[in-house]
Image 1 (cartoon, rainbow, N blue to C red):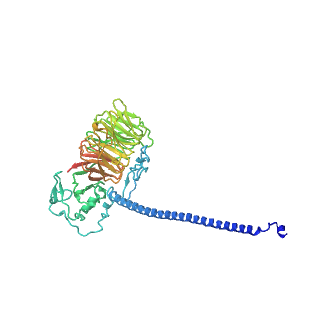
Image 2 (image 1 turned 45 degrees about the vertical axis):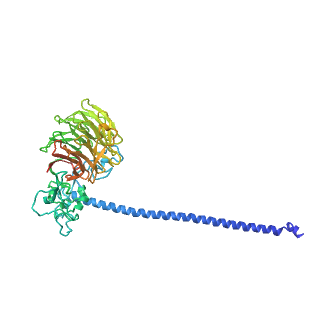
Length: 566
């Protein structure tokens, strides 16, 4: 009766209760097991994340160490460059007190408008052509040559050096300061060579404070030599703020003498220089005007300026070139117009428009019939003077910085911001050569010039190198890349201008490093370094009759120099 009252079937309660308890125990066990599994998974996830964070921390530490190392190398390099600059150009410069000249605009195409920063010491996108800067002490002399300052390196006295080259012996014919008693004739070139000393690390002589090992290490980097450590016959130091350093390598015998002939002062940056074909006159281009000077006297004989143009702002003449007969001067400027001046009457004989951006380069064909022009609008144009119109227009991928006509007027060459040098046949617009690939320049090409043989071409680039190219034969036009005959290395900054002497024996180059170098095209040796300007050497031009060359610079000077074979 009690069981019936509780609502429980007789005999069923114990078994059901046990089953319930077992189910509860089983459920709790499964719950605990699931919890332990989740904890293990969570611990694995946490461990993986911890390992990953440790790797990130380790990588950050490695990057930090690498950053410190790179920073230190950059600081060391900057300090070294500062020392070189002080040695070559005197103590730190102060801004010129006279009126400043605003920078010419940049080339219109290209990723960073490279022309702005080239002349003023900046990198790409820099401040542009700078006015000249004056220096403390004697103008133009290296800092270690100023009054009261001892030459660097002389405050540490080394033991008395050996004298393997026999200095102090009776004088005789010598090469690069080495006595004739130690010279050996070279059957290949017929030039005497010195016998090398036994100790290649020994200083050569008291007035020649370099060892052969140091000379070989420096090689063509002539700016690394300290001029006061070289003997008198390997340098020319002038009171007129310039000096020449001749390559001291005994295998590069001195073959030239350089002298300053005239200094032509201007009121703005000198963007270009060019001789007349008879060598009697030199033209310069600067802000708003072109000047023509008599080479013999250095006197200004004509100034050409278009007064019909608005006088507001700047108008830099980027390029000038004489007609073969010397009666006309072509000028290219930032107003996109080519003017051909009648020099005697000072009037514009021809005016060519069509370029859409600044004109950076011109070249007159030797037949006097056509002019080539290059512009930031990515085109090269050939102008027919008789027809008074554009005869041919060639388009490329980037701004054109320089053009040159071959001696026979068959080819026109152009350099560009896209790092390439191109050569076309002017008669049919066929692309004869384009430099690219491993042998090509690694940065924008700013100057090209044909060698006198008409088959070879020299180019200068912002990659600090000069290259000599062989144009493919007309019979083998399937090869259009051209052959790189030689690469010249030695400039420490952008190469802005290149040229060849009329006999083809020397290549000249001007650079943002303020130096002019002469090179031997046969072997790539740097023969000399001329430091004759206080700013970038923007333009170099040899006289077509030989013996002279001109330079134009951001220091507002053009200079005429003589070179003479020894």
